[in-house]
Image (cartoon, rainbow, N blue to C red; front, side, top):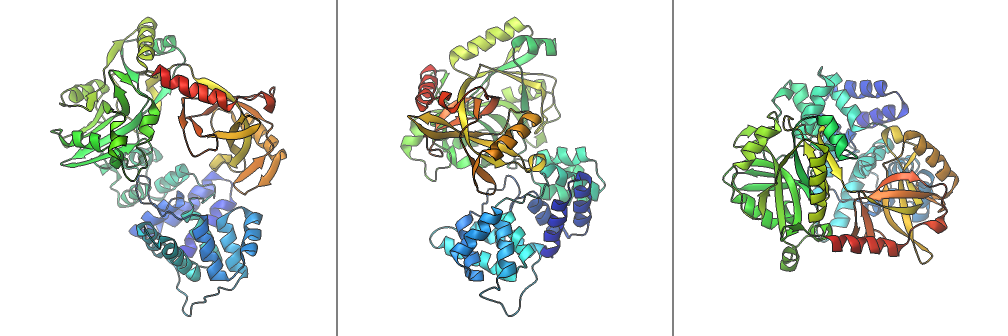
Length: 548
């Protein structure tokens, strides 16, 4: 029953001990049917669908709000009062259904199962177009009529991807390993290949996890690079001849081809195939079934063009001829993970590159150039050449390394040009999850635009745990408004923020967004009067366009 799932979530939330959380979830998973197991493990990661599944329920605050008002008969004022008390839609739904008798009481109230909830949520994802708002609200209303208050709480939490019970995905992995007598390392390594925790759980239950392998059209997690501060650091670490490639400023992409089917996946494992029809057509002409790892970027006359030209293609429902022609794209392939029925992950990079270079490609597809380097001097010279062309830097790779999905390590090391920084002020903060639960760990910051603060981004990395705790307490003392998961604060705390680049964005009122921002330091020594201006942001943006 779904009530059992909801009660499990309450028990998991009530304990701070990781071992107890894992034991509770493991015991629950053991007793589920195959389909229940798949649904429950997905729900426990705070998702309606597994990672990589392109479906989206597209249900927001207003749809849930409408359903709760119609089911309970409460007034908008009563709803807002309850919501402001919790700042959480799930807890709001629980209290409303606990204290208000459903307005549309059903004669025969159904006991919800996990699969009932799964099936109804899947219906939401299939509803689009005119009238979809009312249809979705009706489905959610139907669930609320059947649900007990605690069930309604967790239906909403799953719908909004706000489970917040202190159960990070890593603990669900531990629970799967414990429930079915497998090593945690085995579960995690296979999850990085399948990227579907529900499939991993099912294969673990059936004793078939060892069979999980890379197959075309199903993305795997990308191998990641560590960072070095200098050429000398890299040369000193390897102390032998290694490969080096230019570091591209594009979209890391995994291209899959099986027969005439082609799929392109982003670093977040999102299917972005429709954004790149020109790349897709070129891939279809290849003579092999394969999986490529590489980068898509705007490129002309031997030089990269601004990243923003690439951004304009993403998340558009229709790609006009103008958008397609404004910047020619290239896919630079730098790794081959699968070729004609054979996964290549366990081969060393040298062998994978040998296979890759035998694949005949035509524009806009290309194999990245690879160089051999040994000394810090050679690395520095190649790094300088990279900057002159307009690339971001270098990625140095161990030719003896296997491809390890989802792992960041010293087999690949990136060396990037020095980042720009901005002094910004925190205007709002959000609570973290997992070990950061209860701590304000995500910071929304702004710059000065002629006396008006304009938001330019959000950062959550760069601080030590102690710095984060100190900053969280300080921000709580500066709180102006509590919105539940987010607080608005008095703009006093200044941060120095580094970033990769600046892009035009309608997400923030500044009109810009920092790409990959991270906090270099808290500037308690600076006042809000000393933060950088929107004019400086525009200057950096124009400079990055000119240099490319």
